[in-house]
Image 1 (cartoon, rainbow, N blue to C red):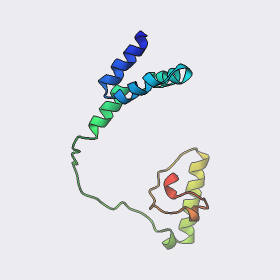
Image 2: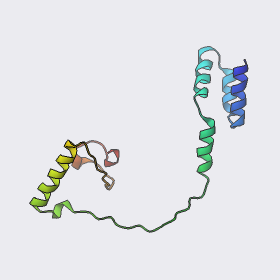
Image 3: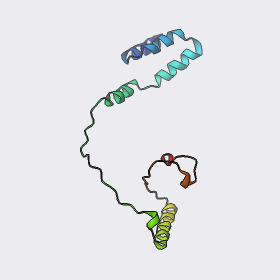
Length: 118
């Protein structure tokens, strides 16, 4: 029973009295499963993360700048071939790139998902 009292104390410390009420109603396997789940929760970290959501965020720089880009439709065939070759070489070398895309459907990527999933 000491373990249960420890769990009650922990739950009270973090304002989770509603779980204590539920634990008192449960018996057997259901109660043990809930106790096991509670033991896996890092209440301190959750509370710390929650408290951080209340802090004011200081934005040091509020200037948005455009980044350089190339319009694929305006590339020459030679430029496209060069970029295709660079991309294929990077893939063979197990390198990767980061791409920023506007939101929307991924139909041009021939997928059922939105571009945000990539």
